[in-house]
Image 1 (cartoon, one colour):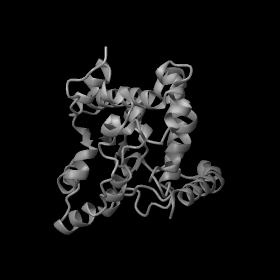
Image 2 (cartoon, helix red, strand yellow):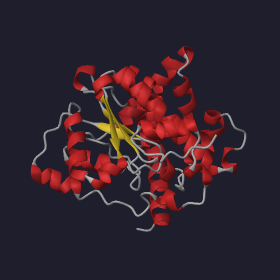
Image 3 (cartoon, one colour):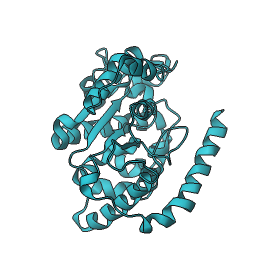
Image 4 (cartoon, rainbow, N blue to C red):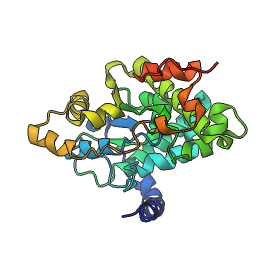
Length: 288
């Protein structure tokens, strides 16, 4: 399936979700809290290659939803919520918490619809989840969060500008962040990943896991084993063999080195610090 057909399929599926699932949410019973284990949540900056992780979790028996984007593996329920309430959830104003939490819980019931066993391991993938960890941690204090980080200089070249277009002005405090999308994407990458690491470690402790996308590509077996261990899932060698085959390293790794964008070769000190924090060399070149 080419990218245009995949995009059409995703839009059709999202339309069906809104048409078929959303109207039935008020009628869906809320499973007793003791029957619902804490979820596994996958977040990252868009374009970081997260789609392989929910597929690997499905192999191990995790319910990652039946209503998902077939191209990206994003859960339709969290997409619906974060498209409309991302800024409110991130701002986390006490006056709005009760209503936002009610809406989110209702949408998660839609995510869990058709789940054969409500007590089985489950979760979702949505890149923007990394921005709203405090909101999610209050709802699911025992959740396990997987934070996938890809070199921000490659991410800045991604054609995935959804976050920048919809929330770039609010997040970056700029009137026209799309005027220089590569620079703005790099700033968003640094800001979002720094926030996710800070909130993940502060609020979740050992339930927060940072994984490197490059490590996933170069050492898939070892990296996936770390993920399975983090979520408490024992897997066999054949299972790891199957999961490893899901990883297909793209040709775009280190594409930034051939880019003419100066901001990628001479990132400012703040962005350089975030790059180094996640293990990426800045080769000593920084702008002033």
